[in-house]
Each structure stands twice: as C-alpha cells, then as structure tokens.
Length: 86
Image 1 (cartoon, rainbow, N blue to C red):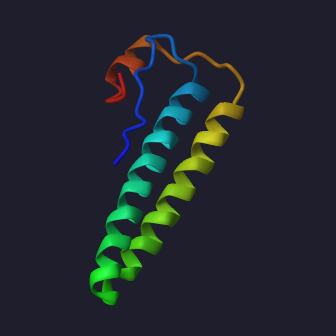
Image 2 (cartoon, helix red, strand yellow):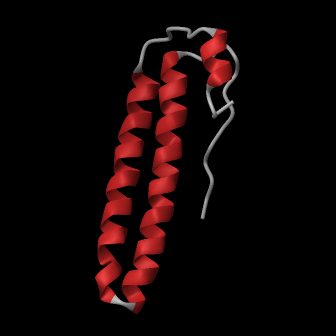
C-alpha cells in the first residue's frame, strides 16, 4: 500500500492544502480498493469494498486536481500549523 502523503510548508497556499488533502484521500481510496479486491477474490460478497475504494480514490484525485488548479492564495500560518498534514 503506497503512502503518497506529503508535508506542507507553513505558508502553503489554499490550493496546496486542498491538493495534499485530495492526494491523501486518493491514496487511502486506492488502498481501500486494493483491500476490497483481495476480499472479493476470496469471497465475492466483499466486492463492494473494492468499488467503494475506487470511488473514494477517484474523488480524492478530483479534489487534488481542484487543489492544484486553485489560485495561489496564502493561508494563515496558524491554519497551516493546525493541519495534520504538516
């Protein structure tokens, strides 16, 4: 399971913050999909976990894409320091 999380600098922009959050969601969703696919291969009733994980990954990637596209508006260092991604 890959971990694609990254640390943000204290003067991160809103877009960078959204991108980091989205990438984290995408990574977690891909891990969830992988676990679901493993369950599905052993007992078909777990196939929904694979589907849900892929949706979760897709939503995270869209969120990350939106974050990368946002204008460079700087957030307050206090907000950045309170983020679990720092």
